[in-house]
Length: 171
Figure 1: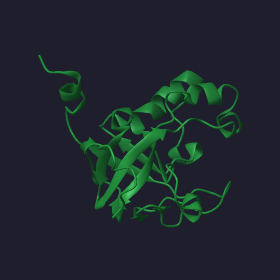
Figure 2 (figure 1 turned 30 degrees about the horizontal axis):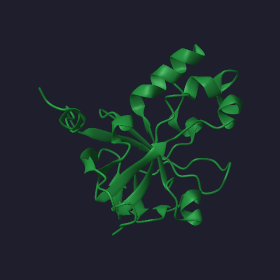
Figure 3 (figure 1 turned 90 degrees about the horizontal axis):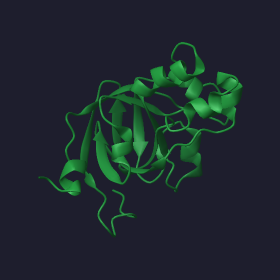
Figure 4 (figure 1 turned 135 degrees about the horizontal axis):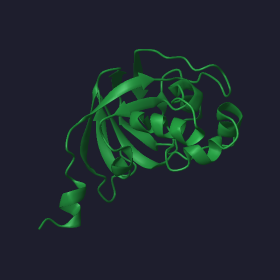
């Protein structure tokens, strides 16, 4: 019988990048390009979080499959990705399983750094109960370890767990 580490390393398939969203400024309209450059240790080119640099929340990702869950919890259709203000929407791979892992999207390598918890703005944009509908479905934050271009349709491939002492290495 495989141990827990072997089970955690077994992904049934790669995921897919479905959508890209950039927020040039806080509360600005979300731009939806088909490609974007991920800058190591900074964030996505054109996103306001990149201007802040550093930190573990350089990119936010949400699971495409969770959009329908959020809609169901609100009693409506799935919200559009730009309403939730995440940077990347991925499908086909469990994002929460990538926390503490390195993964590749396009030419870039990211590191799952934490959970992307909802903010109070979700109540404003989704309506009453929006905050609670997002809890547990807000996605993942990530750091960019290796720069590269991402494009809608790129595979999302799990590379492996972050090794001790690898936290600060960016390429």
